[in-house]
Amino acid sequence: VVNYEVEGICWNHNGQVLACVSLDPQKTEHDGASPEHKDSNGLRQVKVSLVLASSCQVLDEVVFACNFDEEPRSVCFGGKSRYLCVAFGRVFIYDLKKKLCVRKFEDNSTDQKLLQASFDCTDTFVGALSKQFLYLYRLKEGTIAARLTASKSAEPFEFSAFCFPHHDTQKVAAATRQGDVHVWDITNPSQKPSFTITAHTMAVTGLVF
Image (cartoon, rainbow, N blue to C red; front, side, top):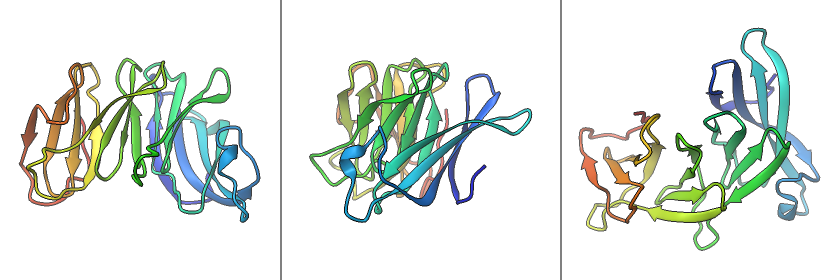
């Protein structure tokens, strides 16, 4: 299924299909998701394979063009598995029913690359994490709702992971390489976290509600 290092995996909502994302070293000359990012050297491919877990049959493959300074970081299904979210410096939302990319999110105002992305439990928001910010985008409108960061009084930090709760539409959490976990209320998002957990002295590498 995959001939290159797997960078992320996820299950669909009913546990029947597994998605895995990898970097394909083969160059590609065009892609419906990102044709504007061609350069003189061509592009590499980010490939997402959708596999039926019961038989290991490959149901479909979705290919995105990526620049040479981008690598796949994460893949995630939406709540009912209609949408697929892939992060590799930018974030692409692929509609599995329409068979096309319907959203692209990136921060053009800074040099922040988006390293991890996922949906909230209602597919209302797409969260995207960079080293310094947690972005909340509205899936339906394709607009940004908030750009969250740690408290201004905090020591220098670097985000390492984030997650939405499975059944709570009001929270989102992000962890840092300095050992802190920040939690925000997304119904009234502000730069300041609702509270911060300081239970670790080393980098937090995973986070789940």
